[in-house]
Length: 119
Image (cartoon, rainbow, N blue to C red; front, side):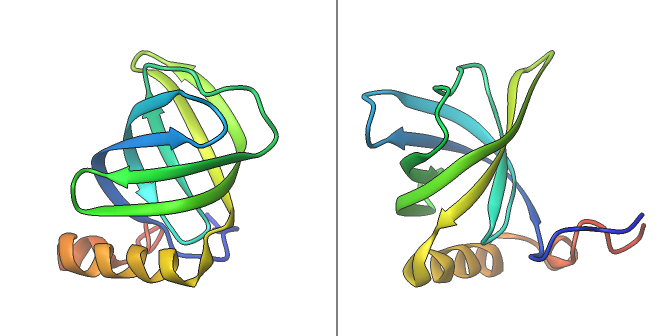
C-alpha cells in the first residue's frame, strides 16, 4: 500500500476534548492518531457542519493545542459513534512543537514509527 500522506501519523489512542471557539460546544473524543497535519477522532457527539473549525484541542491532561484551525476532510458513522478525519490548516509552530514533544514523551518507541512502515 502506498501512503499518500506528507506527514507521519502517530497512533496515540488518548482521550481528548475539542473546544470549538465559535460555538459553545465542547466535544469529548478519542484521538486515534495524530500528526502535525491532522488527526482522526472518534466521538459519540456530532461536530457542526462547517467548512472551517477553530478549536482548542486537549489530549488528556498531557497537551493543549490552542487556536487550531481545521477542516473536516471526511466523516463516517460506526458502532462507536462518529469518526472524523481532521486536516489542520493553521497549527502554528508552537502547536507543532507541542505535538512533537507529546509524541516523544508519551508514546513507546515501537509506536513512533509511521503507521504504514510494515505494509
